[in-house]
Amino acid sequence: MKSIVFKEKNVIAVEEREKPKVIKDNDVIIKIILTGICGTDLRIFTGNFNGDKGVILGHEAIGWVETIGSSVTTVKPGDRVLIDPTLFDGSCYYCKRGQHNLCDNKAKTETGVDKDGTFAEYIVMPEEFVYLLPDDISDERAVLIEPLACVLNNLEAASIEFDDNVVILGGGPIGTIFAMLSEKYALSTTIVEKRPERINFLKKILMNTEVVNANDQDYLERISGRKRKPSVVVDATGMMLEEAIQIVSKGGTVVAMGFNSTYRATISPLYLTNNAIKIVGAGDYNNMFVRAIDLAQNVKLESLITHTYSLDQAEEAFQILTNGENSDSLVMKVVFKVAE
Image 1 (spheres, rainbow, N blue to C red):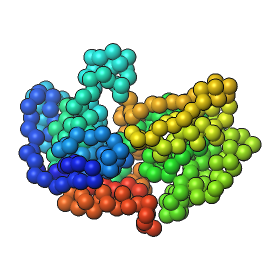
Image 2: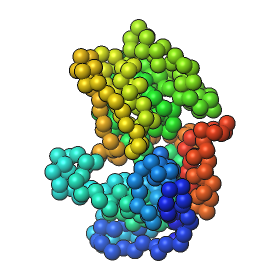
Image 3: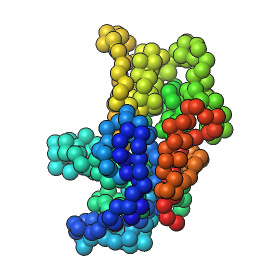
Image 4: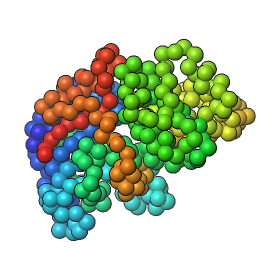
C-alpha cells in the first residue's frame, strides 16, 4: 500500500508498505478516506517533536471498515468510522483512574509517532479505538473531529464559564477550533494571530470573536490593559506561555496547549502565587470522542480545510505548511484524500 514515511529531519518519502492484516480478534482494518496533517506531524518533520524514523506519519483520519476480527461487534465492513489514534492499555494506574491520555504504557502505541499511522491507504486499529460516524456528518467535517476532541479536553480543563473573557494566542487550526467553541461557552473571545491572510480568514469565519493583529507592537499591553483582563488565556502556539501569564487576570487560568518540544519558559512562582494564577496542561483528548462526534454536528470544522492533496503529493503538502509563514497564501488545514 502507498504510505508517507518519515525518514529524518525535513525528509519524507512515499513508499510501498505491506497492507495490514487481521491478526488479533479485535483488529479492524480501515481503508483511509481522508487524513489531516496535524501540527505534530509537521513538528516531527521539522525536528521539533520526536518521531521514530521509518514510521508512517499521520493520526487524524476517517475511513471505511474493510475487515474485522472475530470478536469485533461494534462496527462492520462498510461502516464509515473515525480513528482514536492514542492507544492506552487500560490497566495501568492512570488508566484505572480514567486518565487514559496519561497511560504509563504508551511506548509504540502513538499512532503516527512511534506506531505506523494514517498517511497510508490502510491502517489496523483495535476495535475500542474505532468510532462509528453519523451519516449526516460530511467526510470533510469528520476528519477534524480528532483535533476537536483535543480542544474539548483543554476547554474542559480550563473550566470555562459564561462570564469568562477568553484570549487565544495563535490562530492556526487548533486555536481557531478553540475560538469556535469559546464563542458558545464564554462571555467574550479574542484570538491573536500575526499572519495577515489568516487574520482576514478568521474575521470571516468567527462571527463573535475579536481578532487581534500580533504584528502590532503593543497588542499584549492593550489586551492586559482592558477593564477586565482575560480570565482564561490559551497558548495554542506552544511558544507563548510567558506572554499568556503576563496578560491573564488575577485568579485566572492559563492553558498550555500547543506542542513544541524545543520551547522553554521562565516563570516566577511568586507571581503565580501572589496572583493565584493556575497553569493547566491538559494534553490531548481523554475520553472525548463520543462528545466530539456529537458536538461536530453543530461546528463547521470543514471551513478550516484550505488544501487537499493525494499521498503522492506528500512533499508538496508538507512544503506548503513549512513555507506558510513566508507565503501570502492562506494555509490552514491540509488534508490527504486517499479514497472516495
